[in-house]
Length: 154
Image 1 (cartoon, rainbow, N blue to C red):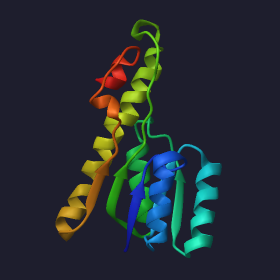
Image 2 (image 1 turned 180 degrees about the vertical axis):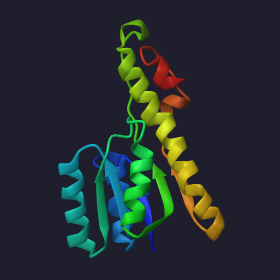
Image 3 (image 1 turned 90 degrees about the vertical axis):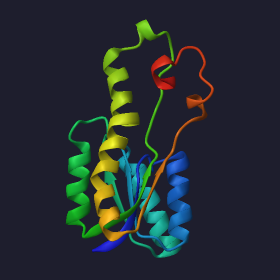
């Protein structure tokens, strides 16, 4: 098995920058996001620039079965996740009573449940190998809450 770093929310922003930095350091990467076109473009950029192996998996972490599907794909690729970067997340704005409840549930699934599932999925292997790391990216909103994003701030 080839050691790799898995980055969620890698199609843009902080996740894409993590991928660029780790790709420049020669790391094998698994980049995850919803937008297949952006993931493929980033994978091509990193492979061309740094000659590293980059696997892109387009998946919506709001789906209940996403973590299990992701683990199956990683194993099928012959990769062993040594570093997990839980970066995927989003927030909703507006009055709580007016937010579509389905979107609130999707936000909780991505921001909390998927992070927890992926951590529980890959942590046992890291512990068994006595090596690995997990980075959970969070927002300053966790420390400085304000109006119209009550569930996100919670």
